[in-house]
Length: 286
Image 1 (cartoon, rainbow, N blue to C red):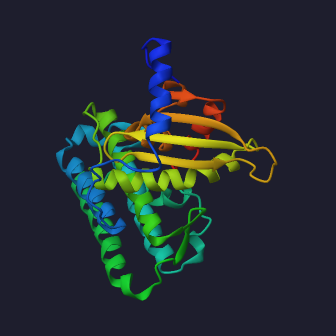
Image 2 (image 1 turned 30 degrees about the vertical axis):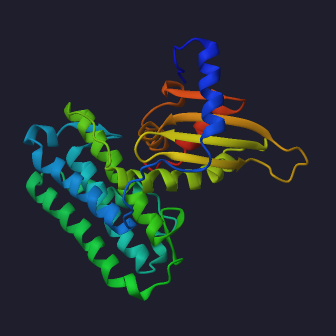
Image 3 (image 1 turned 90 degrees about the horizontal axis):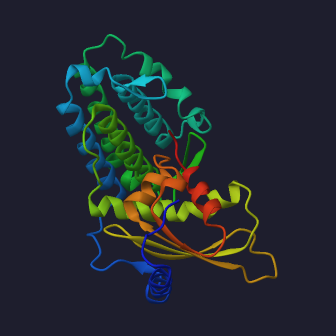
């Protein structure tokens, strides 16, 4: 990971001030609140806009794993299919592999007109949005759905979907030589909030038993400040204090496993930062 090149004494004062002055909460002014469904719809519109601008040559560009852009869009068509199945209560998708379960639709795009693939993806996303609208009044707020090894509320799943669309949008942008995009502030706020909520589980899952009191500061739009107890909280020790200060968008790139922890521009104070950042990257679906 990288840190600021400012003199060490100044850096220590900045970190200390950040720790003392940033109590838990969101940055002010906060972005307008939107629903998880609206966040997914905005991410879908952004992704659709990118697809509409691609040339035929860019559709054939290798982008991720063994997929070109068109096959990656096919993967996302499959993900939308599984989302709808999960919301409908289909247990077959509960523990299905995120990649393997969509491979049929990824492979099916070979030889298809890219315009047809783009239309099929847009239709799939719209069908998810329509199903959410249709079932909105028929489920409890805390209803949990199971999909691809995840157990999440419908709202959390929709934020995960917005996160994945933004991630793959930028995969395509990078492969096609286009500039990266940033989610709008309201969508980014939901993304960072969900990622932070899942971070303690990721740290535990990766084997950390050290009690750590994390003070996490995500800077910029969509950011905020959180105090998170990590590791084994049954120990009699109060836990070590750890401060992490990082840009909110960069943190989301880490959670998407699109930037290595050691390449992240992050300010730290305390022990255990490397493990926490590595754990964050395990939240990615790919």
